[in-house]
Amino acid sequence: MKRASTQAGFTLIEMFAVVVILLIIGGLGFKAIQMTATASAATVFRADLDTRVHRTLARVARELQEAKLEELVPEPSEPFGASTVAYRCAEVPDIEEIVWGEFRQLVLAPSPEDPADGRDNDHDGIVDEHELRLIHDVGLSSERMTVLVRNVAPRLEGEQANATDDNGNGLVDEPGFCLARRDGILHIRLTLLGKDPRGEVVARTAETTVWPRN
Ligand SMILES: [Ca+2]
Ligand SMILES: [Ca+2]
Ligand SMILES: [Ca+2]
Image (cartoon, rainbow, N blue to C red; front, side, top):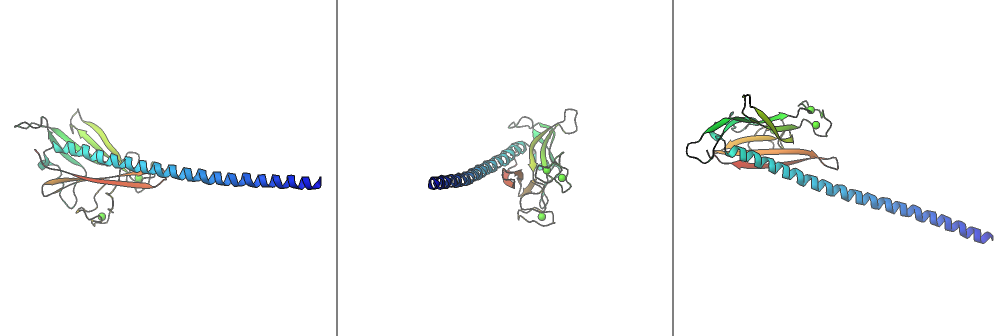
């Protein structure tokens, strides 16, 4: 009888050990699944940020394609370029005598929720993010503003505020959205920031060019 009781005791300990091992394996498995899911969500996040930066650049390029590029105010010359420009677009493109519309403006401005003070005022993990605005009918009663994109980096990727061209693109200390004219061609650059599902702040940068048409 005593021997049977010892065997039963062993069996219980063994069962307990098995349960503990299964729990550990299950926990590790869950952790692995969780890590894979987070990594895959981070990949999707980066791809989405990539799409957003290219889509915004294409939108800005379409806008400036119809502009009187020779009369951008201010002239976005190197090495500083311009992040806020005023211009006029052809009202009816592709006709012989162009009629120019009212002034429009592309404006890079600090996010209202996160003023440029070196702190993350809105606690979204990104410090001093900006937004890119498009204003129609500048200065008129019909003036209206659209935010083209948020979470623009305070500086273009690779650039720091140190009076040096850190990223070697011919511009010094340029902001996260910048226009620059070189040899008559307008270069548009944009860096967007985002906090991915792993909590890392990631940057995506793209560049496009616009040739004078009007
Ligand atoms: Ca801030
Ligand atoms: Ca922020
Ligand atoms: Ca710099």
